Figure 1 (cartoon, rainbow, N blue to C red):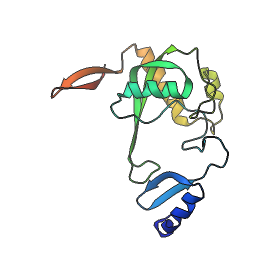
Figure 2 (figure 1 turned 45 degrees about the horizontal axis):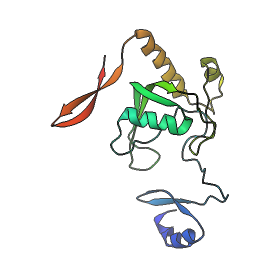
Figure 3 (figure 1 turned 90 degrees about the vertical axis):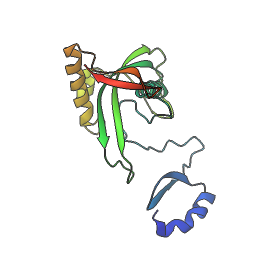
Length: 178
């Protein structure tokens, strides 16, 4: 709703609506009607790599490991940053976004979840299965990321890997491309 309609917010809250997201000139409110936790999508519907925002104090690899576990039940550790994407403006006005694509090693995939609050389904795909998915179920950049992974893997190099370092008395993570 735009600012001109903001006077009806108390009425909508009284009717069970809650805030989905807001920007300087509008507010999105939603109301999940079933008696189950809301599953209204906030993201693209289709197959995707596990992803999500960092918690305060998390490293890139810690975030990736947590998100992989939350969305799939698979325990994994970060190995390298394969690539990253930057959007100067995301779907929310005046908010940028940087998305890191990490190479992960599965430590334990014996408890892969079939359904979580964040993902309706998860599964391992073969390359052939990925290539045969229709365009509405997987985005083109997923195919490009796999091609870049193959190139990185065949080069036999460590890639963009993380090493802790000290900076002004604080520990930080440096990422080196080798």
